[in-house]
Length: 324
Image (cartoon, rainbow, N blue to C red):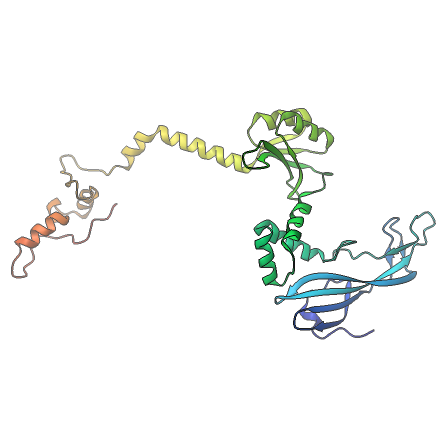
C-alpha cells in the first residue's frame, strides 16, 4: 500500500481513515483514503465480522482548504455477516462520524452549510459559500434548513412552547423546540389549548415546559402534561421585568425630576434663559462669585468695554459651562 502523502498532516483527516495519496489541480484537491479497522459491525445484528467480501469507492465532498474545494474518495469494504439469525448476509462498513449512509458529503461539511443557511438563507448563503470554496446551490441551502427543522420528537425532556406567524398577517402557529438539543421538533398551524395538549399526550416524556405567560400555553400544558414543571422562558422574564421597571419609574416621575434638578442655595439668582442653569451650581462648587462666571452675553459686553487689550477684572469663564 502506498505511503501517506507528505502533505497529509496539513489536513484534518478523521482518525478512522488512512490517507493513501493526495492529488492537486488548479480547482480541486482530491484525498484518496481507506479504512484500517480489521473488522466491522453489521448494522442489523451489530455483530463484528472480519470476513471480507469486496469493496467500492465513495466520493464525499469535504470542507475546503484555503478556499479550494476538497473531495474525499474513500475505499469502503464489504463484509459477510456470519450471524445465522441475521437477515443481512453482506453489508458495507459504516463511516461513523464521517458521513451518513447515503450522504454525498461529510458531516462537518453539512454542519457548516447549515450554519450558513440559517444565517444568510439561500441566495446570499450560496454566494458566501462559493467564496469560501463550498460549491452549493441556493436550493440546497434551503433544503438544509428544512432538514434541520425536522428534529427527532422522541426523547424530548425539556420542551419550549411558543406561538409564531406562519405568514405575515396570517393566524398564529405553534413551534415546539427541544431546548437540550437546540432543535425544532414540530411546527403546526393554530395556537390553542387543544393542539398543545394533544402533542404533549403523544409524547409523555416531557419533564419541563418553558413557555410564555399566556393562558393558552399554561392550560395546554396542564391538560397534556400535568406532572411537567412549567417555567417562564428567559425572554418573557426579561420583558416582564422591563415593563415592571418602566411602570414603577413612571409612577415616581415627579420624585425623579426633583432628584435630578440641580441644588441651589437659598436666594441664589438663576442665570438668564440663554445660559445653562447648571452654571450656577458650577459657581458654587468653584467657590467664586456668580458674576465672575460669564456666559456668551456677558462675555460680549465685557469685550466691548475692554480697551487697549486690557483684560477685564475678575475671572472669566471662556468656555461654555459643562453640565454637572
